[in-house]
Length: 306
Image 1 (cartoon, rainbow, N blue to C red):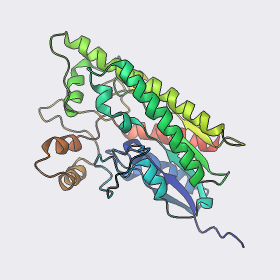
Image 2: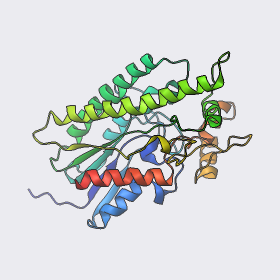
Image 3: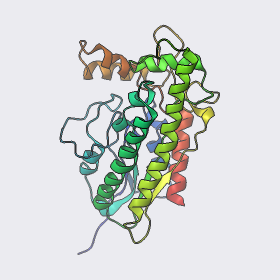
């Protein structure tokens, strides 16, 4: 029996980073990668499954219908995204994967009352253990030895060069505040230190998960793509590659699809769920902007062509 290839698939799994929170489609990393690969492969088809809020979800049993990708919802999980692929796995050229920040929960990263020791344990559990388990599922589902699996890293949400005045805005968007009774700058430094910790330790954990996945193969086909963020590319820093929040009474979002997301948030959350709606309206904060998404796409293309 002959295998007839109709399409070559680019499969994109992941959370809001791979979804492209706040970006028009032409600026999303997966669209940039697709367009570049299509230059030399006329049969390339994108099978896109990522969405905002997705958890890896190892062991999760909840099933929930997908909503608009701009709305931060944990389900479908990345495990469920793998299962949702429709097509012949033999025809998959590459699988783009990211995840773990939502399993850890951004509020645990930004919350100054969550210790760095506790955060370290969460990173180990999800950026390494959960990602390693996810990659085992990905490799089993997409078993063609020629299929490359690209795992992307995260970035410093805040850094030591982020302007301190903006930090309370970002915390308020997640329903958090700086500790009372201590100097505000000291409280800000605690939050910044945890953002730096997440960036650095999750990068190491994800690299270790990639190495563990490759150790089970006769030849490596899982690769790490690091977009090359620096401290200066954090929110409120000198050259941000991330969306922030406007310095106004409404903490207005600064992205490209504000009106569209607002409507989607209203559909997803009833008026009584006011807090979830407000966070959803500003969900782009802390996510790659046009420049940041381009850096991600460049790193992915380099990993695919390396």
